[in-house]
Length: 234
Image (cartoon, rainbow, N blue to C red):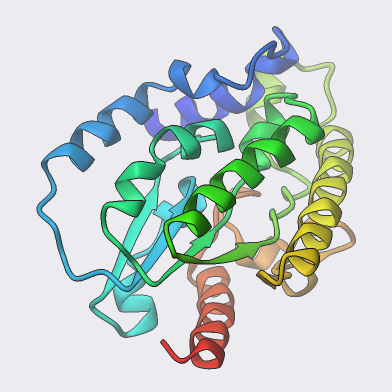
C-alpha cells in the first residue's frame, strides 16, 4: 500500500508543482535503493536485458519467457534521464539485446516530449555504441481511471479521465517520434499500444490500477517480445 501511495505521489506531484528539470529521477527514493542492489549483484550470463520502469519491474521475465538468460532492470517511477544515468549497469552485462520501455513517468512529470525523446535517443545510442541490439517498445497509455481515487482525495476538482486523455495525446506524440527514429535507424520497434489499448486508453482488463499490468497484460507483452527474439534468432 505504501508503494502504491508513493507511486501516485510521484506521478501526480506535477499537478501541484510542475517539473522544471529532467533530472527528477534524483527525487525518486526508490531509484537510489535499486542502484545499491546493482552494485552488489554478481555477474550472470545475460543475453537479454529488459530496461524500464515499474512496468518492466512487475514480472519475472525469465519465467514469462521460459528462459534463464534475462536480466530485468526496471526501477519504479524511473524516467529516461534516470535510465541514461544507470546505463553502464546494462552495458557491463554485455547482453546481445536490450528491450526498452519508458516515457510515461516522464510525461506525467510534465517533461516536454522533445526532451523525453532526446533522453530516449541518448539511451539507445549508448547501447548501440556498445554493440547491443536495441528494441524500442511503444510507450503505453494510461488507463481512463488511472489516479482517480488519489485525485478524489488530493485534487477533487481534477478529472482523471481528462488528465489521462491529455497525457495520452503526449504519449502519441512521443511514439510517433520513436517510431520514425526506429525506422530511419533500422531499429526494431514493437507497437504495444496497438494491441494493449482501446479508445486511446490502456485496456481495463489488462491492468489492475489503470497503468500497471496484470497477468493478462504481461502475457500479451511477453508474446510480442518472443516474436522479436525468434525473428532475430536469440
